[in-house]
Length: 85
Image 1 (cartoon, one colour):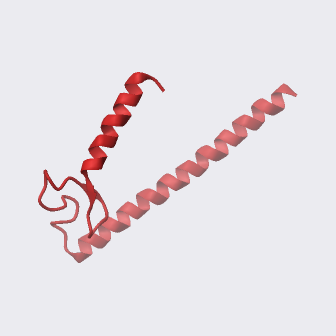
Image 2 (cartoon, helix red, strand yellow; image 1 turned 180 degrees about the vertical axis):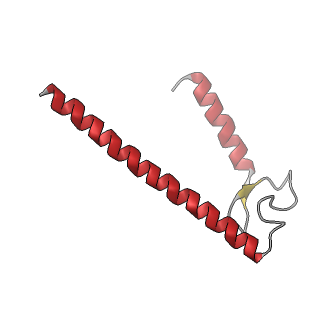
Image 3 (cartoon, helix red, strand yellow; image 1 turned 90 degrees about the horizontal axis):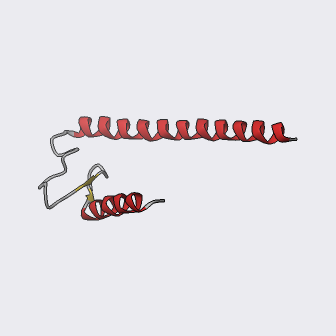
């Protein structure tokens, strides 16, 4: 990792340390900048349930994508390894 990458990573970590998770939805927000959570403060219980379902669907989609990338990496590795034999 280069110096610029480390600096960017440190800046991101510094920003995340300022934030705290919302007790209602679990998403991060900066209490110094916003009085209430910008994600769920305006939502009723139905809207909150929809937001949490959307968040869970995104997480599951990312997991599926990660599995596909893992399978592709294994296939590429096997093709390269078997090609050398």
